[in-house]
Length: 541
Image (cartoon, rainbow, N blue to C red; front, top):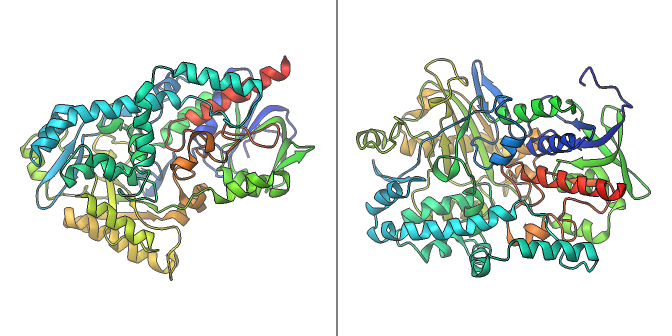
């Protein structure tokens, strides 16, 4: 416990969990004059956005690994650059194929076109039109990210006003809304097939539909996940970038900004329960015996944990209990953090350098290993039947090509993220299969970068149960729940309570279980703070 915190101190608001959304929420509440306490289960703030040592002298972004979605508005308003946040560029994304062949995907349309043209002139010619189409849809969704979902079943005056206001703000969307409907219902493959001919080119975009999601490119609704991943507004392929010092620098900057505003942050404080009195949340108690009271309690923990474990079914409507139990969080994502002598020496490396593909970069810092649609679908099929992929899709990134703070001179850190590795295995468990899966991951990398095993100093492998155990992501799900049509907007996480409020008065949710979902964006935390302050203002009036 922090030395300057005394049990019994009076707070306006308590936030459960010092992940990035909890810290964003704390900052905005404190800016509005609220006295805020943040309680964190672990001994370090950050949730899934943390930088920790994986071997002597080597530090890695343990869970989230690239910056894309953290919104410039939040960076600016919370002065995160003043508190040490520095975004570093990564190279354009490269997808290796057989031999020394590859496809480049860049924010520069002409560069992507030139790469596509080597495989399909039709696909290269159509790509600018597709990019415009997709970005027009993404621009609509970017605006919706900041909205509080309304409950269309309510008939009270406030809901009517909120719904009418929402419709008026987005009245110019018109027929473009059909694009959103298509992406919410179509598979990534069917959506992309309307534009492109070559399966390898389609795989470049369909890959995003599988990141952190238990789905394949032919799964209905997977098209939307493509858009979720490319909505970042920073430089790089799809808006990606590295954070100097790793992703923990984001949450350290948020914590510093919050403390500057008077926020108290207590680590090593696992929450045992949210105390309910006469239908209202009044306090939280920790497993170590402390109790903290406040008029407002906000949870950055996932909705399932909050509702079923910290609140308890007896305090909730039966319908909410039924829906939250059915809220899908089953994860098949894995993460490997590697300390190494040198990064993977890909078969394509000489050709990439010779052709000057990466401009000022001498090495592809950001790659996708999944050469075609069938590769992605096979990886999903194996997981669908209860086993890990024999050839998983993998995103290797090498932040130490631009960030020298993470490894000793001349050494490197490589982050691998991929799927599918189901939370539970059919007929086996991870205690006996984890080392076999580790070999599978390295075998897959070796197909494209022979000899990489020999350069590895240490490799930390995290499968879904590990991720759940360390940072409490439900079943290891990086989004706190699937990004599917029935778990988005006014149905996320349960119908009737998608507006950051809960059935318990004074209790709110600010994490990725809420709209607009996962990723290090900070937007759920921002939106939740807005609704909390709105209710405080209404009570005063």
